[in-house]
Image (cartoon, rainbow, N blue to C red; front, side, top):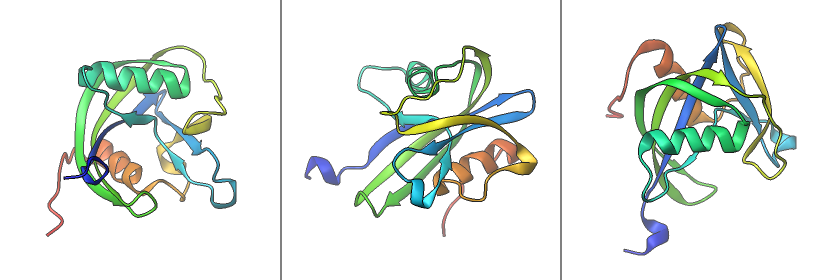
Length: 142
C-alpha cells in the first residue's frame, strides 16, 4: 500500500483552565474561520504522553498536567484525501504563556467557556470536546 494512502495517527487535547477550554484559529483560513484544540501527528519513537505534551507546547506555548485518555476517533479529510485516527486527551493547564506562532497550524489562542464555544469548530475537535464532557471514548458509526 502506498504510504500516502495509509491513515495517519494524530493526538489532540482539550485543555482546561478555570472551567474554560483552549481553542485556536486554523492558520490560513481567515475567510472560513474554524477553531480547534491543540494537536498534531504522533511521531515515531514518542510515547503518547510525550507526543501530546510536545504538540501542545509547540502550538500554544503552554505546559499541561493530569493528562487522561478520553477518545479514539477516525475520520476522513477530503481536503487531504486521507484517513486519520486521532487519540484524544484532556488535561489541565500547568504553566506558560500563550504564544501566537504564525507558522503553526493554529493561532490566536483563547480560553472559552464551555457554554460559549464558537459554532465553527473543526468537526473532529467538536467530537473530542463532546467526549470530554460526556466521558464517551468511542462510538460505532453503524
